[in-house]
Amino acid sequence: MTCEELLRALNEVIDDQSALALYHEFADHLAGCNPCHLVIDNIRKTIQLYKAGEPYLMPDGFQDRFRDALRAKWKAKFPDATT
Ligand SMILES: [Zn+2]
Image (tube, rainbow, N blue to C red; front, side, top):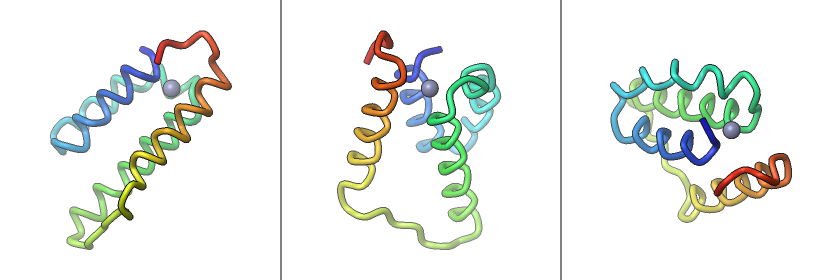
């Protein structure tokens, strides 16, 4: 699994809470990729906030900037990874 594949799967997790089962399929990738691990952890906390009924709004453009920053880090760490 590449970072790109994991990112795509993350969108499904965000869109459908039942897709959290995908989390277990990430285990192998997460074991060797700390940035992705942090992203998953963040998303889980976000979903937990939703379930608790707490409003959780990200600033405009935050997701894009966050994703771009992560991609830059991943590119630096894995120059050969496809993006
Ligand atoms: Zn990764």
